[in-house]
Image 1 (cartoon, helix red, strand yellow):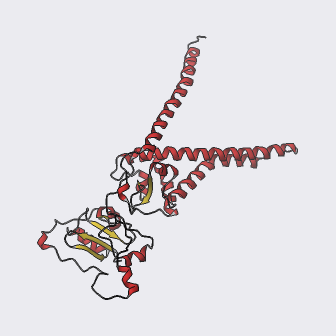
Image 2: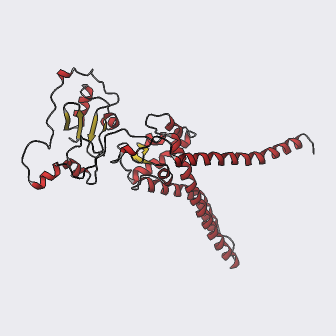
Image 3: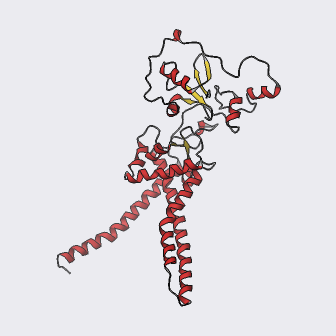
Length: 331
């Protein structure tokens, strides 16, 4: 498909092009990783490096860049030839009167955008702020608390209902049947993963693109192009958390060291966690710092951990001392 564009300083926008043409331009050195590029379906112009997976640029042999005088002239840009168009067609190629002040000066033809995404709004082609490890950890603390509370509410209601049913059966002369016991066990073991899945999949594929924890600290989840996850994609991301569990949580720690702050599950699912204003018409509102909410959550979480460890030590130390005295035959 000829749905790719790139921008060359001094020459303007080049396209539409096929993916093979863009790869050839990269291989020949005409464009580089930091060249601004756009493809149908993307919400903004981005450095070509962001499309490396789509274009299979990794491992592609690159020739030295040619001298400026050797560069070929830019091919004509489709949709901007000086031809007379009908009023209904002309509007599709003219800039909107209410265009955002942050709109990219390299926006592709609106006719192309209207075919791909009628709700597209041009955004500035700027840097994306990825969510750091500690901000993501603060969001995880909030989400874990929400899921845990929901889990215990379901457990309480389920066990209470089973208890009432068992009591009624015993009053009727029968005993607690195996079905009731099995139902309680099913609730205990299955409620948490079911609640967790519905919570993460539902929120991360919603219009907010974020769970309650992520919304609180100002971040969201996108696919590799900065777009909203489909339900199936969100399901895959939730299931990929298993990779972090089997690696003893090292997969989560990877978010502190990778270039785009991606954990193992993000890499497996092809997702990004970014500031809530990334990939919007207001990228200038992105924040690099932790933010007040994240700082407060981390402090409260740290204090809760200290209190928890203090309680554990207060119980464990006397028990250990008693065990030592008994083992030594004292007391």
